[in-house]
Length: 326
Ligand code: F6P
Image (cartoon, rainbow, N blue to C red; front, side):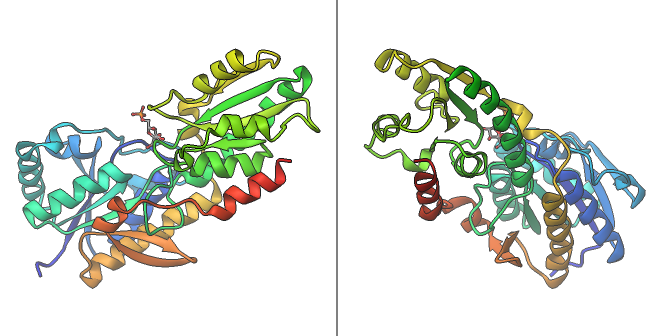
């Protein structure tokens, strides 16, 4: 196995609070280990375009508390092509980078997997996404912060919902995963969560209305996962307007504010632990795995599992919300 003396680090896909803490941890752990570090800007785009700088311990000073990513990020179409990945590989070699640490979500780790196979490059992934949709890790970097941001917003929406006796449909991110919706609904005391995992034949809106949601309350908050398929919160609000015109309905789409802000302590600690573990994993000879956390222990999850297997939502969480929203 080729000796590693320089690693490259990049963030890719949607940014997530705590990515800076992860960059800092990887950089410092690598330097602690006697390795050199190169920061690659704008994700795989930067590898293709040779936007690469030497990183020192000072390069990551004063970053642990900052949201976003100091390395910037991008979703790279070029990296989806064989030619793009060849350019990326050539730049890696030109910069003497022996191994790559990729911080990102599903698509970013899928990119790392293809790249690693095609060019025999050691790659380690860190789960960086607010969606929490990577299999094999209990949490992803950014998820806890985004969850707290949503809860803070919903608490505010509740004030106005209660004052006006309204139903609010609050749309949250999550792409194809309902973790943000389900758990923010529990934490904010919402009446229901409409999540992609529950898209059975059962009409979730009909169910919510027929449960008699106004038995003991005059206002309601329903958290809805964004959905390209049915249109998310707008769709449900329009349906209530048409099917139950007696209710006064409003929609709030939280959007990208969920991706910003200072990372929570939980995310900073998670990112720091995963970053140090990534360097230890490389040192041990691990290749093409995502570093995750399971039952508070570091685990190595092969890329193939992390990105291919759907991470299920615990039925217990669905039950908790149902019981508490009577
Ligand atoms: O994957 C993170 C995420 O925020 C998803 O929840 C959301 O669907 C998507 O990224 C939005 O992507 P963009 O910032 O490219 O609009």
